[in-house]
Length: 165
Image 1 (cartoon, rainbow, N blue to C red):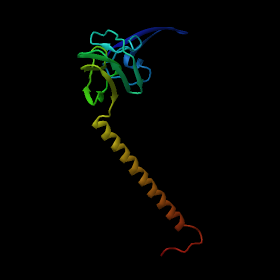
Image 2: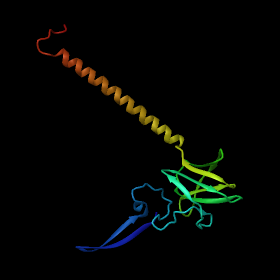
Image 3: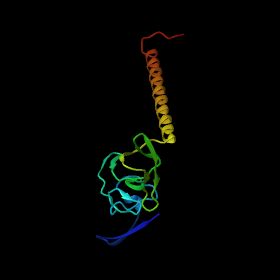
Image 4: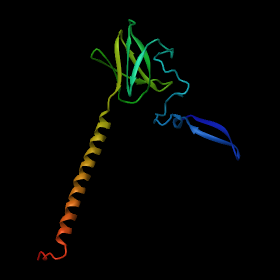
């Protein structure tokens, strides 16, 4: 974990502040292995971290781009790597892995084509969503039953009504 130190001048003198770089991400949760995005290139890079002249479109967690160069190459995409990212081209799915230096998405492509990198939910995440949805449903049913029971009890206890026994 990398710690950054900053000295800031305040009304009360100099104050030393320490920040974990994960906290400097601008509101996005980052894995422990990540790059300092304030200075990192936003271009698609080769395995030597050199910017490539590839134009890409990014929408949310989906990134698409076209490669016209023949041959196999390893590319680093300007996306934070999380388990679940896959790259697809012409019906073929490519696995991704984390770049050890930057924490970005890396994959090996095998020639020209239009590639689409997108996040697909992992089985564990889908199971957690299902459990949460089921819990919400059970709580809604229990709340509805409690409300009906309270209404029935209130109707039975109205003044001027004969006792049930």
